[in-house]
Length: 196
Image (tube, rainbow, N blue to C red):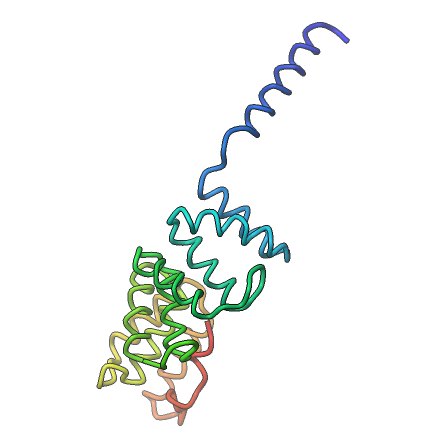
């Protein structure tokens, strides 16, 4: 082997070693954990999320809350899940806000409270969470705040549909048919709130 090729291979090897010694950024660690979760490596994902959650990283707190809620990669513990969701939500994480809203919406581990669910869902929607946009629109159609807020509901549903939420588009289509008198669809009786 020529000395120049050997030199370049040595430099490449040193660069690779140095690259592996540099710690991953939080975003890279979260991405690695998310890949692990999607491929069924729950223990690996929760190992990463736990470390980040203990460091106060809100998205990791929300994701660990999800792990505790379903009992994959960690012990199923709804109280702990709610605490982690609340920490993430209060820190401004949209996913944490959405999950905390879901807990109140379903009454899972807490007393069902549509007003509290709406409060957290609306914060999540304002922070860009698409499933929360759908749920805020539906809750407004249900009159969760004491009156049906049709214009606001349409606005949230439209935003969600523009971001690819097919259920939001379906609701908008049903609303259009209802406005024309061609639908007897009951928004309160449908399970839209179980959709994401």
